[in-house]
Image 1 (cartoon, rainbow, N blue to C red):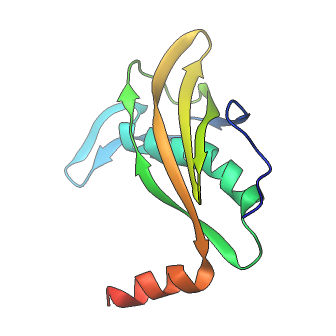
Image 2 (cartoon, rainbow, N blue to C red; image 1 turned 90 degrees about the vertical axis):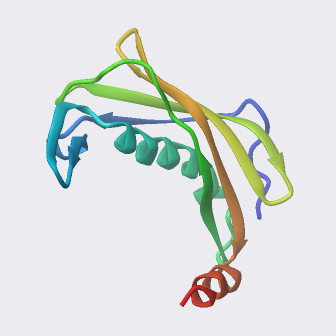
Image 3 (tube, rainbow, N blue to C red; image 1 turned 135 degrees about the horizontal axis):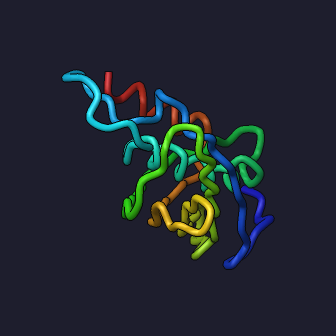
Length: 130
């Protein structure tokens, strides 16, 4: 694992909300706004941007935790900016806080954890569950 970043470093990512990012379940549509589960996906992505640069060729980053405090809606076609901030790097774990904003509105905030493991270890974990 390459130690390229430190506490306080940031990464950002912008998501234009698409119809498939809205709250739709097997029972049908709930409401036409950015769904909490889609926010969780994009929050994990912005934090994973650190892991992608930090992992070695024989390593992989895996998400181990994500929290979402969903505070305000975002509509289809609106742009939501995610910003991740490294809170802590401990051994092979990267802990990030993140916030998602749409203009001046805070849409969501939370935390994400990524671990960087040897690819062989990841493959072993997956094969152990079969």
